[in-house]
Image 1 (cartoon, rainbow, N blue to C red):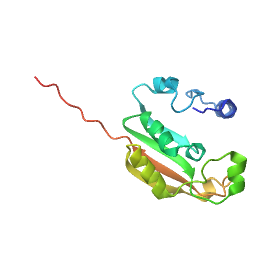
Image 2 (image 1 turned 45 degrees about the horizontal axis):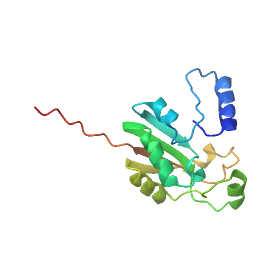
Image 3 (image 1 turned 90 degrees about the vertical axis):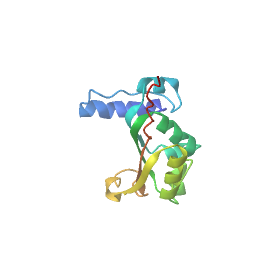
Image 4 (image 1 turned 45 degrees about the vertical axis):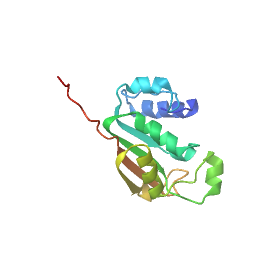
Length: 153
């Protein structure tokens, strides 16, 4: 899912090159009804790669991502660690220059997620990317299981 048709075209090319036949691309915003209809009762896993630093309100974006999960589902968010590269921000139209791990943990709690942890991503894994010189990190969190209440007679 992406809001950019150009990004989806690039993704479609990679999917074709790799021979994947089980991938569906959707052009949508996180809050679009067609996206929530597509995930139905919720996804087991939602992966958001380099999304939050573009979001005007990361708190809202994280809540929208969490809403896509089924109870007990996992959210994986890859985003920048806090950095000072203003040229990258300007070139990529970034709203935020990354996040401290504590910020991500706080945002995840506010989104109602539990078991949140942040892990640094080894720099060599991103080194080939144009933004590979800044630190990346992974937030892992879960949507809490809902209580199942039995019928009262």
